[in-house]
Image (cartoon, rainbow, N blue to C red; front, side, top):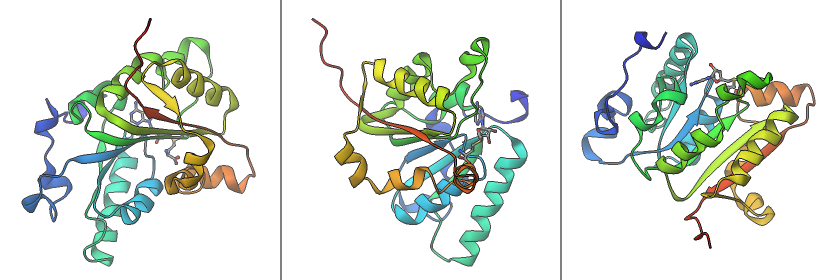
Length: 218
Ligand code: SAM
């Protein structure tokens, strides 16, 4: 249960010296990307070299899986001196503790790749995208920040899109913007789950939205 992992009492208590030991002493940089439910970490590994100057973290509930990601990052650091210093992982329940990790407007990208579908209506409240949680994500994302979602479950894809579409602080990226964003190409192929879906030639459904300042209601 949750009692088995430590939770920082506020974003200023997140220990950057543990997560980014090589970068930490000379930099006041903050984490800007969060991969929520990162699984085995494939996306983070791709992003780490694509954005070498950006600090990023995976959030994963399963203890063994988060330990695996930690080891994966440590061995990549050893094998590639100077690289992968900007990526780390925390074991946590993102549905409860996002505001403990990030302050208002801190993040520029959040990822929700192939989240658990929770099919039954009574379990929809366990979905990682919901109207309530989008309020929290809007809080930790800076204006212009982007939420990336993808799933192979059509019903969940519709759900995530409609939650985002109906939220006053998010707007969809245009086709042109999606094409120009190198990160969009990673959504379907960088993670372990995405690769599995691709091997089985499954369909995917993505929704990519930007945090905006809501227009005033009249
Ligand atoms: N994003 C990865 C990928 O595409 O390969 C993993 C997808 S996997 C189907 C969903 C992951 O979300 C699992 O590893 C699960 O443990 C994690 N997860 C589920 N609920 C979570 C929560 N509340 N907080 C953090 N991680 C969670």
